Amino acid sequence: MWILIVVIIALAIAFIVIYNNLIRKRNTVKNGFAQIDVQLKRRHDLIPKLIDSVKGYMKYEKSVLEEITKARSAYIKANDVKTKAQASNQMSSALKSLFAVAENYPDLKANQNFMQLQEEISGTENKIAYSRQFYNDSVMDYNNYIQMFPSNAVAFMFGFKSTDMFEAEESDKKDVNVNLE
Image (cartoon, rainbow, N blue to C red; front, side, top):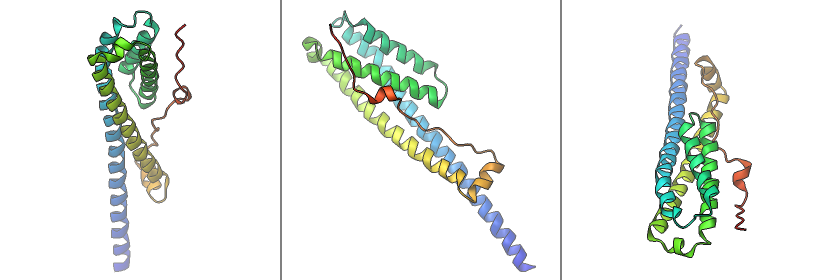
């Protein structure tokens, strides 16, 4: 009789520990995504300042500026991890193009406002990369936990689902090609 009671108590404790770990890991994933969101918002808040600082110099580069504006709008409208990742990747690509084009404008490269904004955006890009890495590590840990025995049984009982990683698209892995003809 005592053995049965000890086994039931041990199973109950194991169940509680597993459930609490699932909650902790899911919240770590949510926190990781929130950190990405904070950095992406910061980058998007810097974009109008950047565009204003380059408009006068880059009269013939409207397509680059339009691409940045379009990417910014796409991010604002995004409401899940996948669409935010796509919008973020689109913005990264547009910023790479802008900075590549800026190399051909010596006056712009010497402009103090542009240099400061470029530095702030570069710093933000580094923070975004770190946040993405933290998020993806958290997602991997969470997904592994909900797929491994015995935690997968508890995860199934309470409806815990796998989460998507924040991934770069193939187009973002290529070098930026800027044609100024």
